[in-house]
Length: 86
Image 1 (cartoon, rainbow, N blue to C red):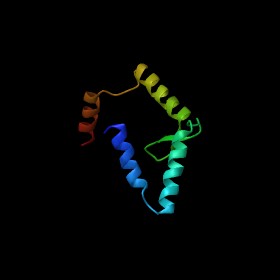
Image 2: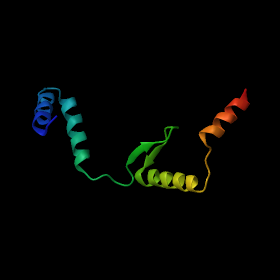
Image 3: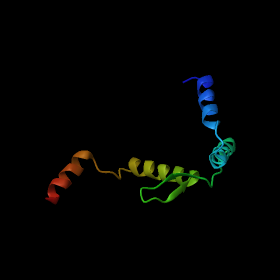
Image 4: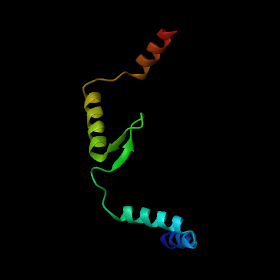
């Protein structure tokens, strides 16, 4: 979808008298205009804990360091471990 077609579709969506809807769209657009802060939530853990950009990058670097240190289990070893559960 090109920029012109996308712009026209957005204009169609904005053609409403629903003030609450328009306020939500405006708030969303204003947030997108602003550069994100390092304290903004950008991801969530599998437990649902919010992560800032700084915490997210740290988790990725920590995971990468663990892998480089050999702290992982191969698929084959995991499959063997699962077979031993039974």
